[in-house]
Amino acid sequence: MEIQVLENIFDENDKTADVLRAEFRKKKVFVINLMGSPGSGKTTLLEKTLGALSKKFSIAVIEGDLFTARDAERIDRLGVPVIQINTAGGCHLDAPMIRKALGSLDLDALDVLIIENVGNLVCPASFDLGETVKATVLSITEGDDKPLKYPLIFRESSIVLLNKIDLLELTNFDVDSARRDLQSINPAVEIVETSCTKERGLERWINWVEERVSAGRESD
Image (cartoon, rainbow, N blue to C red; front, side):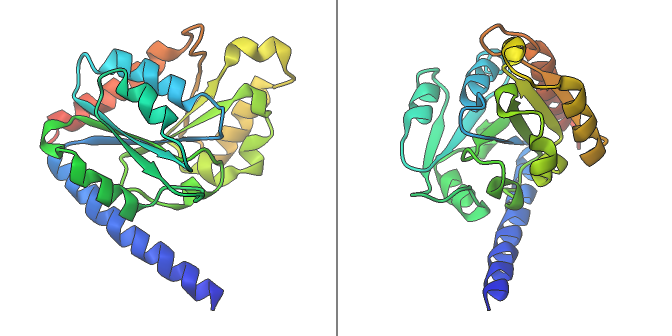
């Protein structure tokens, strides 16, 4: 019975995600599902990203968190439209939540929608949000064993950012090992080493996003 319940949940989510994806494509909105552990640096990366891309594109953000609105408040200070979703303890966002949040956004006026998912390396990867791409932030302070311990999120991601690389010397994180594991899980994955505080690798990440947003806007 529990298996059937889970199947129903995933089936309903996927149906809603398919509807959302079709709508995003129709409106030519590039959607990033930004995932990663609590404290990996997702919100700081998002702030840096918005600072660069909001000069070229119209962007909105959906913030997912268990209880607080602190991340949304940080984004709001940048002057970017932001919708807060509190999951009241839930470990992920799902497509029906996104559909409800879209009622407060004008997709016709957007080029990019960034969804910062709840901090978690497990549940968010299982729920399609209708996004264009999934991006995962892995802080090097979490350890280089995480790709093999939590393979689904890395297999589903188009790009992985090895963040806080400026702290590498203070950890035993093996970058080469992490890269090999990531590529064994997902041979096509883009891997970028970043430091938001030192602004290392951010240009490569920004360019990666910008190229795909522009390509989507120019497509038929």
